[in-house]
Image 1 (tube, rainbow, N blue to C red):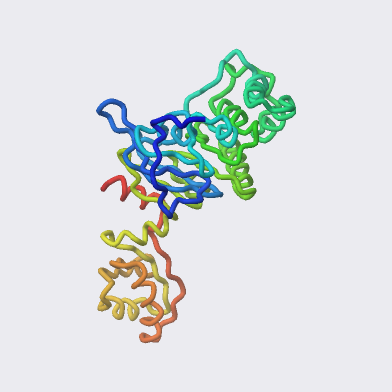
Image 2 (cartoon, rainbow, N blue to C red):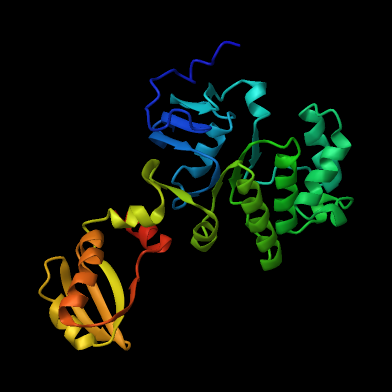
Amino acid sequence: MTAHPLWSQAPVPAEVAGAPLAAVHVARWYGNVVAVNDITFGVGAGVTGLLGPNGAGKSTLLHMLAGLLAPSSGQVLVEGRPAGRDPAIYRRIGLSPERDASYGFLTGREFALLSARLARLPAPDAAAHRALEMVDMEAAADRQIGGYSKGMRQRVKLAAALVHDPPILLLDEPFNGMDPRQRLHMMTLLQRMAGEGRVILFSSHILEEVERLAQQVLVMVAGRLAAAGDYRAIRRLMTDRPHTFTLHTSDDRAMAARLVVEEPVLAVQLANGGLDVRAADYGSFTRLVARVSVAAGVSLYELRPTDETLESVFSYLVGQ
């Protein structure tokens, strides 16, 4: 099949070569509006979280990765092949969009069965049953989708995305509308599938969900990729923002007196039965703490970063 001209060929950078899912200098614009701007990354097996404020381009990016939307420039690769206009690639991907993509007069079972038949599965009824069981929707499968709650509609969309057993899942705000029990079940399901080697990329505006599920994150801001990787490693690279720590020792005053003269230490404060420390560099400070405690004759009971969170990373990147 001839590639669509918008899925342009470009050299694949070494850092994304071999990734099951990759974007290479991908951009998408609508007239004068740039939705996604020159993004390059690779996603491997496991769970990756896609973060960004509203309008950052997350949904546009997911639809390009699914091969449903052509990049204006660059290319999307699925298992090394261009994603667009290739039915064989579509069979490797399961997409659950943020917007409802089902007819209210269909039952959940009919919707899953329709997806199985569109995928030309040899046993569509069995595949639909299996997918509905996976998302805990078998009990409500014969009710019309129009009568479902938001959380139930989310789960039946996921069943449709899973019905052909794809190795790559793209999920746009999959937890919207779910109650705590449904959310816990969904998290457990995604963790299990990631453990089986699937590639799972999901967007969410709830940082707690991403922090709990994702081993890696992609952070989009104004159509650009602001950061990619382990959010803890990203935080440690932010050298222009002080790192904060809590220390508990056998003699906090003696430890504070020793720390305050060290070069990476910006401030030390006695608080909350311990020490609050601000340091210019994460690595330098964590390496010197043991040496300083030995020199001061002080036992070190606890050293804990207090701002090494996904929320801290996200707020910093969005605020830049």
